Image (cartoon, rainbow, N blue to C red; front, top):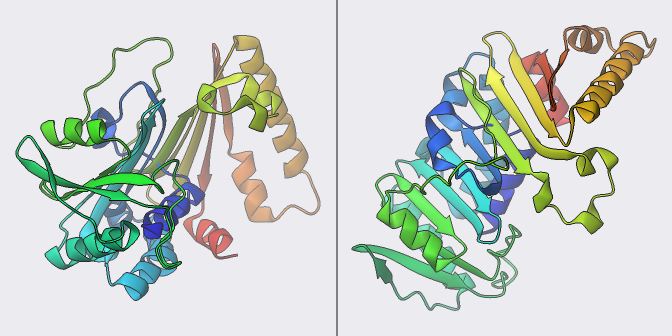
Length: 305
């Protein structure tokens, strides 16, 4: 199970994004979410190098250690968490029976060999439970999945992992999707873009206040980041919904000031100065939007360093 942790960490490192077709699978009352569209990355012009890095740094380790080939089998991954229910992870792709068997073997090792099948809506699922460490080889640190997780291969082209039994049964009843929550002022927003590659979003009130001393975080209600393929460039967009318009304007002034100082620094790399010069900073009521275009080779080089 630790390979789900490795994959999640890599996706967060590379600024995750949500493909437009998958918006309906993220409930509006989620505390956080991320999504990566591997097919879009493989097929994109600017994103191909980024995908090659992901394959070399993450997928290759999974292939080497447990023989599962996400490069050939996974199309996309979506993860989110409701405020009090724990995480849900859905992998979509054409997974071989051998891959499913290997995942079951890992689950059996973590659960001491006890994997009796459960059923809901005519579909099988399994409970993995343990201390998150089987002979030092299995480790996961995504909220509470290290102690209890449910997994199912019953839905076509999907591997579904949940923290709670009720979450799994709801997903099995709705073909891997969760009903949308009624929209209100706290609904988690999702950015949209053509050729979206990866995206992440979070409601900051889900953070533990004792662990976040940043004044910016305290005055921001939601944050979302999106990475898209623009052809020759990678487009990065970040949006912050602040507690009031004055805070959004203050943050915009700070960002513009930092950009100006950086662009005229003698130590600034010319290519980076050009990127910063093209950065857009806009404010709409209490929403701050920052957008920039990145050279794909520079992004891969930064990840490798």
